Length: 311
Ligand SMILES: *[C@@H]1O[C@H](CO)[C@@H](O)[C@H](O)[C@H]1NC(C)=O
Ligand SMILES: *[C@@H]1O[C@H](CO)[C@@H](O)[C@H](O)[C@H]1NC(C)=O
Ligand SMILES: *[C@@H]1O[C@H](CO)[C@@H](O)[C@H](O)[C@H]1NC(C)=O
Ligand SMILES: *[C@@H]1O[C@H](CO)[C@@H](O)[C@H](O)[C@H]1NC(C)=O
Ligand SMILES: *[C@@H]1O[C@H](CO)[C@@H](O)[C@H](O)[C@H]1NC(C)=O
Figure 1 (tube, rainbow, N blue to C red):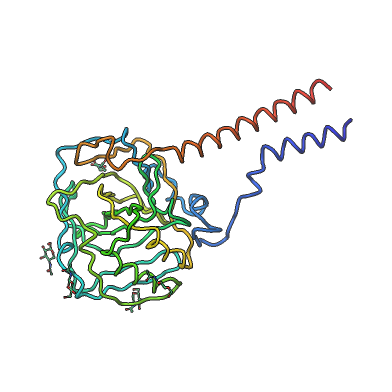
Figure 2 (tube, protein in one colour; figure 1 turned 180 degrees about the vertical axis):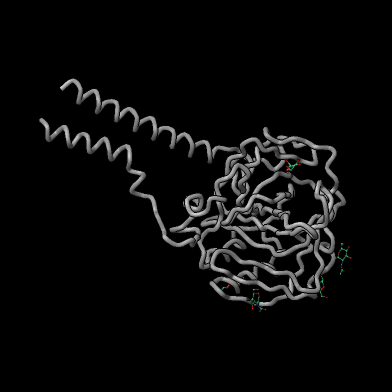
């Protein structure tokens, strides 16, 4: 009788605490997207735990149209920059492209207090074509996100312009050049210089549509001094073109979306429901599964306790 009671107690204990056995406690401050992945970052870096973390899910119901935002200006971006040599470096976590030293790419407008200059751009992708982007729209994940990181001219603040890629049936010839360079940068510590014309990635209209919010770096130390500008226009890419990422040494490198807390997401246009928004079926199924698991665990526990008490 007493032995069964001990076994039951042990069983209940393990049911309640099975998650503690899965925790990883690395001694070093390394991080990556596998063993020391995004879920462990808040344990490794205090700064990955704030209320202004990125990325986020952009929900149409949370958007606020702000007619007072200035137009977003891309300075130098839309001119033909292919004569310059970019430096593409694979750092083991992503591919980073450093602009040519003579290039003068910057952004201004919106609500930015000064000119912000391009420091680098980097990419985030996923295991398959149904994921990869860090920011999501109504729970929908895009296959690729390219982030252009800018630093303020006088301050140390950052402004990141994010471009999302959308799956299409046909190849997009304008990104072939970029993809063939990325295809040569599949492994850690490979660094190449290559010409690249990025003008086709940027909207040429005088007032491109964007979403705006205050957030953080999406990689440790997740510093929270970032103005995020997500372009509403998506760049088409085919499943075939996305295949170059399956050859990369990193299968996936995106952080999951973070809580919005009391933050606002502004838009410089009146968002319409039909516009590039997908259903949230994916995530809601996932959520309801997690929910069901919790409920079933609870009932199992309840039955066990009742069973033990009536004995
Ligand atoms: C940019 O310049 C290069 C080299 O002069 C040329 O081959 C390319 O077609 C140009 N691209 C555009 C979009 O004008
Ligand atoms: C770089 O661009 C900014 C904004 O377009 C301009 O004010 C500045 O004079 C440029 N600097 C150089 C060295 O060309
Ligand atoms: C990428 O590289 C592989 C192997 O070198 C090659 O077979 C493939 O065609 C390349 N893809 C692109 C898009 O350049
Ligand atoms: C590219 O930049 C990285 C980091 O700054 C540097 O280590 C590397 O030598 C550069 N590669 C080339 C080909 O210039
Ligand atoms: C971001 O934070 C600054 C400073 O607190 C605030 O003035 C600004 O309105 C915020 N921007 C957005 C989009 O919420």
